[in-house]
Length: 360
Image 1 (cartoon, rainbow, N blue to C red):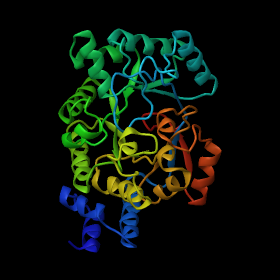
Image 2: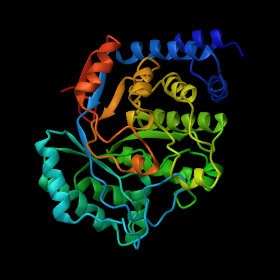
Image 3: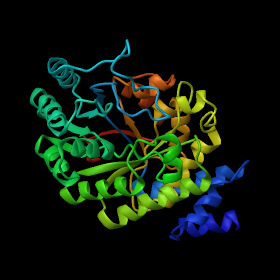
Image 4: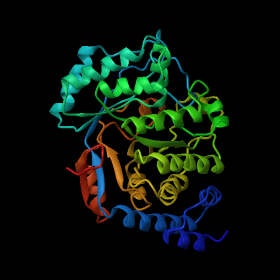
């Protein structure tokens, strides 16, 4: 397979196959810059020069979780000395703080607490929404939807409808990790299957709840697994058009059971980070927005991602516990002035957006 011909065809409108994506993931040496250059051209053609961000705040309601995913350093058992469960008054306090900070989005994904059911989730959403009625709720994911439905004996469709009635605006496309069941059996055996993740995402889109889409890479997966994952995401978008963005998430390995027990490798390399961003742009021709995660990659690699196909820097966050507990060192808050510093260095304008990517 000739790299130059493939990239030329791709930028001219050829739709990459899984085999071609797998080939691109294998590129090494200076050829990676040919891939990132093509992706940057595709980004410019798709969305222009602006780099976007959302002013958001995380609220992680609990770190107590019935699952013990191998890639997670955040979850705790109920008896752990550092286990916590936020009260409704603390949820209200944090939501009002978000309002004072003028954030437009509250993001919340937490552990699967043993006592949680559908009513618990809806109570959390309503508490936050009552305290901050004008802030968009970007919360939960297909795993939490499945868990709420199972604990309450209802369908996931009914759970999603209850989420929507409780004020949920969009659903997080996390819990995807790698959409390959053999890999999921290694890294997160307690999580829903690939087919169930896909089904719940499609249900959300059909109900009118848009979602993000993610991939977590750099642990036990192969280039073929990555290409298959991208194909699953593209097929869903062809059918529903419900994804607002795609977010590659580089595996933070330091304190995770997978790495500590010698099962995973020590995360993705810089080459892999750049190629994942670039190939996501080239392969996902039906998703406008590709986000680079400064939390996972660090601010300098995030800047390089912006010239490798990405057009979005994610959010301000204010609080970030999940990556930090796994050993991430990039901090919990990114000031828009620092975002502007790295985007101006690229001669690209920084624009604040809402969750749906409409500009403020």
